[in-house]
Length: 362
Ligand SMILES: Nc1ncnc2c1ncn2[C@@H]1O[C@H](COP(=O)(O)OP(=O)(O)O)[C@@H](O)[C@H]1O
Ligand SMILES: [Mg+2]
Image 1 (tube, rainbow, N blue to C red):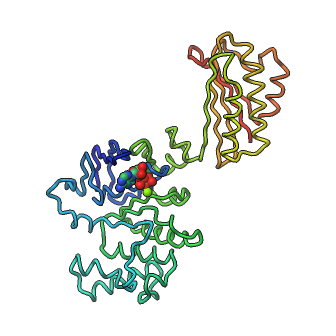
Image 2 (image 1 turned 90 degrees about the vertical axis):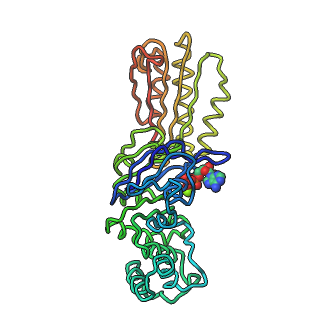
Image 3 (image 1 turned 120 degrees about the vertical axis):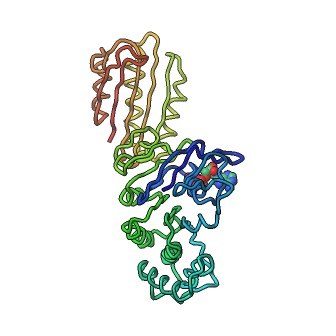
């Protein structure tokens, strides 16, 4: 139904969309997720032509809507947009807000627009509010009205840009419930949201956006449970990472130690885990590896999962394949073994880093 070909959007200081290619099929419900600033809103705004792309093409039902000949207002009527900030008219009652576009833009009779509006208000659970003004409603109610107003134009696609992120947490559920109902009707939808459980449950496809485009596109389970690519995995499991390398016996020891400290403080890692991390660093790198490696080449990756409150500490190193367990330093190995919840060694024969030790701290 919608096809994006080499879509590009450039702002003076940033290029949020570098080269986006995607095909959105009729009936697709696509959750769009990703860190803020990765172009999720820009993508939605380009699709319904609120923003002019700087390159590439968009096709909607086989018509190129980025062509200069395209009737933009007409296309926009077929793509409803729901914003974070409702955008209702304060001087109009709820029902008038809903009737406005169908009467003005589609030429519907007031009676037809009213009947349809009342039907939609019923659907979003607010038929008793039809004569109220927006200011008399809660945020959740306003957003449900905004959804009804979008539906009143009977668009082919609905684009929702963080529809619940301006709401008080107690009102998120009622709006999500309305969106869930809408999803059941088979309407094509794209929804940008930070609510991961909701995003996972509602969609048949998900886009993870990063690095100037759709970084990973997959089924809900592929994206939310088993992401294939690194950035997606970090985002989904809310992973924070710290990497450092040691390439000489005379490396800057205080800098590395304080780097670990800062990382732990910033991510509010418990004192117990912070201590285990320091201890493992000392025993594995200082006591076991550095004395035994002639020309050390060590890379360490610390990953903290906020979701599981768990740290993984991976240390890659060169030299002969030798596990810490085989080291002569039995004392350090003993300390290491007792401080980590898991400790494993893997060999990578023939690679720069021929060994990997992985420790988990729970
Ligand atoms: N009108 C604009 N002018 C300049 N820069 C913009 C404009 N709109 C968005 N940006 C920038 O483009 C990037 C992507 O923004 P946006 O699409 O809003 O990201 P997201 O919705 O994923 O948080 C951000 O760096 C943002 O600052
Ligand atoms: Mg946004």
